[in-house]
Structures are given as C-alpha cells and as structure tokens.
Image (cartoon, rainbow, N blue to C red; front, side, top):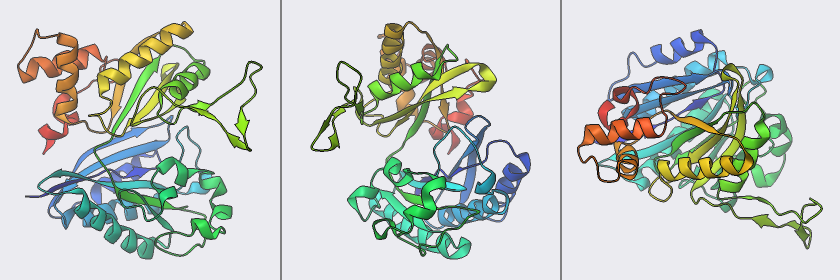
Length: 338
C-alpha cells in the first residue's frame, strides 16, 4: 500500500467545536485516517496529520478543509503564527511506496478541487511550485492575510488555481509537496521574546539583515545584505507562549537529514547561553519519523544503547520533549501510527 502523509494547518487553536467537526468529517472516508490533531491557543493554530493512499488522502484533505472552512473566519483571527488564510497550508509528503513526483500530482489535484469548492485562491509551493518565488512558504506568506487583498491585485501573485478575488472570510491556501518536515520548538526560560527572536535569526538558514557598528542595516545598491544563518534547511522565528510564561525558538526542520533534531537543540542551547538565558526542553508539533529520534538517541547515549526502545526513550529525555506536555511515543512517532 502507498502511504502519503498530509498535514493541513488551520488558523484556529481554541474552538473545540471546530476540532470536532474536522474529526467527524472523516467518518465516511476510506483509505485514509486521522493520525493526530494538535491545537495551540497561543499560536491560534491547529496542526492535523492524515495518512492514506493516493485516492484516500485527497478525499480526506478536502473533507477536513471544508469542515474547517465552515467555522473559521479570518476577519476575527489573531495569533502568533504567520498565516495567509483559514486553511493556511496543506502539504503532501511521500512516506512509503510513493515518491515526490506523485505527491506533486496529488497536490495539484487537491489545489484545483479545493479552489473550486471554497472559491479561494490557491498557491503551489516547494516541489510543486511553478515559479521560483513560490518555492518558499514564507515568501508566499509575506504580508499575511492582512496584505492579501492588495497582493492579489499584483499579476506576479495571481494564484495557481482559482481567480484573484479576495475571499474575506477564508483568505488563501497554499499546497504542494515536500520532504518530511519536523515542526520543532525549543523552550527559552524567559518572557522576553527578543531572546528567542535573536536566536532564531542567528540559526535559521535565511539568517538576518547585516548591521553596521551603529546598528544600521547594511545595503548595497539598495538591496539589504544578509548574514547567512548557522543551520541549513531550518526556518525559524521567536514567539511568546503566554500560558507557560516562556518564549520559544519555533523552527521548521525541512530536512532532518541535513540538520537533525539534536543539532538544532544543541545550537539553540549554545546561542541561549551566550545571551544569558536557559533552554528548558523542547516540543515536537505533529508527528516525527522514528529515524529522527534514533539519530538523537545515538548522539546523546554515545554508544551506551543500541536497541530501539532505549534510544527513543533517551532521545525524548535528552531533548526534554516531556517538559510542556507528555510525549507519548505511540501517538507521536509516525512509524508507530501507521
């Protein structure tokens, strides 16, 4: 059986009725299942993880998006996480007996159908992108929902599916195909978000604007000069987590083979120490491949353990994945779920 993962991110992190309707929408879908639904009130965002074959995953993605669209109104939305619409991003990921090319085709089918059903503009990103400036999700999101109406008037930003009419309630949607992304947040024991923001800028691959000795941004021929970040295949930002009285360096590890979990965690600890703040554990939002935790377990155990259970448990403990919420490996490791 082919296994394709789909990870819709919706702009709602508080309303239990919305979450229930998302779950119920899958009751009659065959060849796909809900693996997890993880809301966050501070981000005001819920990450849903689905898995299925090439036909089931499309039907499941459409159903959950239609359910979310009934309840979410972007005119009332506020949250810490950048977003372009009610159904912010819907990536498709090859997991087993499939490939990236097929996931690109699936994302195109989904994008066309959902644009027609919900009357929203849809953009293709990552491996499905049809333009270079749409490869990166953050480039498509620039201006966010609040700037979308104006953005849609620019021919450069006409959508890949649907027309350029502004849907005031739902905004726009981004879909595509990508490698397995790990949404990884490292906890900073401070309520001052500036620490997390600075660490994120130092570490993320895109880096930050270069500044001169007076603190002024350096420009050459009108273009901002950037200092490249320390970690490849990493996106990052600093955010507040009000309910815990801390902040986080919120990262997307877009290829954990290039920058593994433990490297991102240790790099964050190193930069935090330079700034005089401490790291207190971390969290994984959504699911994680078993291989990523085995990598961390081998790194931290330094040859002490070789069996799978011990390596996974050691990784969970060393990364502090239980600090904010219990990390239940049977519900968080995708290999154990499917």
